[in-house]
Length: 310
Image (tube, helix red, strand yellow):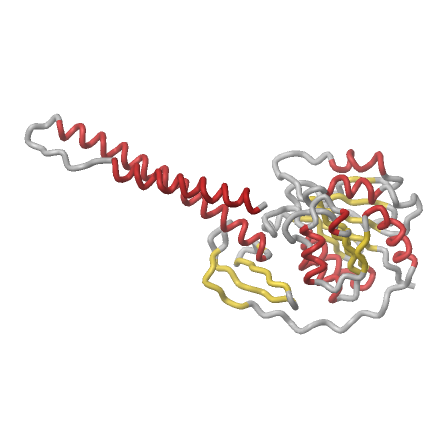
C-alpha cells in the first residue's frame, strides 16, 4: 500500500534552529525520505549536514547526483545546486536561480509533487519573503499534504505566512509539535490523486529579468503569480520586487560612476584648453558632480526609508 513517505522541507532565514529542532524528532526507524533545502551562499561550502547530524537519529548528508532514494535518510541540498526529486532517485541541477536562490525551495517541492503526488508532505519553516509558496501549491494540487511552522513560532514568519495566505494549508503547528504530526501522517495511507488542473499559459509582460535582462512572462497558479524569463530565472512577486530594487540601485551607482568620471574628464580637458591661448574654456564638471550628488542622496534616502519600514 502506498504511504506518505516523501517529506520535503524548505527554510531560509532562521531555518537552522528550526531544522535542528525538527530533525531531532525523527525516530531511527522512520519509514520516509526527508529532503531539505535551506537558502545558502553559493561561494561557501555548507556545514549544514554537520550542524544537523548531532541532533538527528537519521543520517544527514549532501547527496550525489542521481543518487538512489532510501528511507530513513535526510538529504540536504548542497550550495549552488537545486535539489530535485525524481522517481526512485534524486538529481542535482545547475538550472537558473529561482527567487534569487540556488538551491531554491520551489524546484524541490515541484519536482517531488510531480514524481510522487499524494505521497508527498511539504513543510515550510522559518524564512523571509515567499520562496516555497508556489511549490507548496503544486504539492496540494497533486494531492499531497501542506504543513507550515506557525508564524509566531518562527524566527522569521514571512514564508509560513505567505504559504497560508495562498495555499490551503492542512496543518500549522510549532516546530516542537511537527515531528509527532509527521509521524502520524507517514502512517496514514494517502488519498486518491486529484485530476490535474488545466494547463497554465504564460502571459506576456513589459518587464525584463533582473538577472539576465531577458523578456519576462507571467504565470498564474490559482492565487499565486510567478515571473519567469526565457532561460529559466523565476521570481515570486516579492522576490522580483527585491531583485528589481537591487538592479535599480546598481544602475544608480553606475550612473554616479559615469557622471563623476565625466566630470573629471571635463575638468582635465578644460585645464588643457586653458593653457592654450587660442582656445577658450568650454567644459565644466560642476553640473555632472551636482547630478551625481543628487543620485547619491536619493540612494541614501531610499535605504533609510527601507530601514524605517522594517
